[in-house]
Length: 249
Image (cartoon, rainbow, N blue to C red; front, side, top):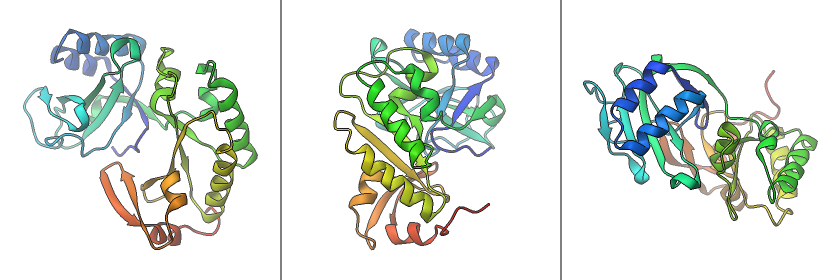
């Protein structure tokens, strides 16, 4: 099973039970039980997360992972493990928990939530500004999706956004025409000074580049590209030249 970064994945009850059984502490166990009870999704993270993410491991146990994410390994089917994650709200310390499960443990999956679908989760001071950004996106015929704090708030109904929180968005660009529309939308969005936006441009080959870095880089420069299987430097010109003039039917 191949899933894109930021995609949502819902686990089967048996998978939650196994994860709860090997949780590192009571707080982690409670998080798993809460996610299972409400059938909340996890998100797909980089599949290179954790130095042992693709090794065969009998049973389930805790393995280390980068950036202080505590990872529970439960990939009983070592042929197709999937790295997922969840984040707790501020009231629970904003802890991030990674899990590695077998593909068969995923009951269903879906792309990241659209910005428009996430709007009902917003409260002041973000609501008016984000609604303006969404209206501008529709006017420019682009369809951003959400990840990060806003995505978690929309998925769970709990408080993740706080003063100074970024609004994390990803925008697929499948042609030069789409890229131009996305750039025009971002230029418009940049005039909303009160809203800290962090936008990824997602290219058809799986590379995702910070819109800010893309805008500031020369054509011949390299940009940091995030992929589901890792991070690498890619020349901006290579990504641009690979795009068709118009989206393929």
